[in-house]
Length: 398
Image (cartoon, rainbow, N blue to C red; front, top):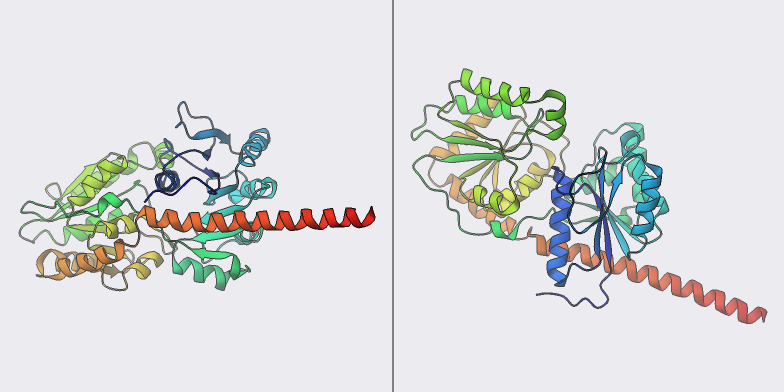
């Protein structure tokens, strides 16, 4: 149900933003869109987009394209953000200027309205500077949001922060995923999607599928996504071509399909619904947030994932299978079970559907709205109290 515009704070968003191809850009656009839909209006929801240079085109809601490291650009951004009632920052070390993205501290220190920061990464073993930056972010902002209980515990245990400033709000997922599966055809389909590059574990996935080529019917494995822009800039198509060469060497021409597209949300949702299994072969042992994992669960899909922290947390109740990192034999065994053992995939899908229903963007947006309204109200009360004390003091002097 749409909320009334009355008393809802205007919000400035600071993040990378479409058309930039980036997980944080997609997240911010989805969050802003869900808030706008809940309010029934896009009024007062402006975006300051981050980048290393100006893009030729931007969406209408982008009120400024900030150039990282440009002090005059930062000053202009702060002036615009201070016209809002509250500012939502997205944080990842690599999206702001300065060493380890330290420019976010300049933003926060100069913004005069309440702030919320959403942390997309909480490192278990940060460098001293990374640790200091994250601690300063938490100390300087009204509320810091993480997207998993694992991230919350890690912040409390590894960082010198005030727990009262921390909140957990899960990563959101497209509500359109919550429809019956349209997976069909005699061959089961496993799907991995997202930006492609080193660290995604795709090499391990290819080795795992080479070990299940004896299955009948023969499974299909679809790798959907463009090469990560930074990998593309540094290596061109060499990484993707190397993956294709590996698939050929393993005799997987009839198994693996490379779909080199970065889809809009509706097209991506349609592709996800056609899959029988979602495979997350990631190499990172640090990942406390995975939008792909959340979307897979929202779509009610069984998941096979390496045991990165967010997967361990989300799949604990049986919505998927966890396997060790860089272990193609274990991954192949999990895939074989899902593809060939009656009832295994269906039981996982039931668990995934139940969990995924709590992760839709409207629910997540309501969580952010509640935090924002509370912070703005508190700021108003504090300002009113201070004004009252000043007025009483002047009256006494008079």
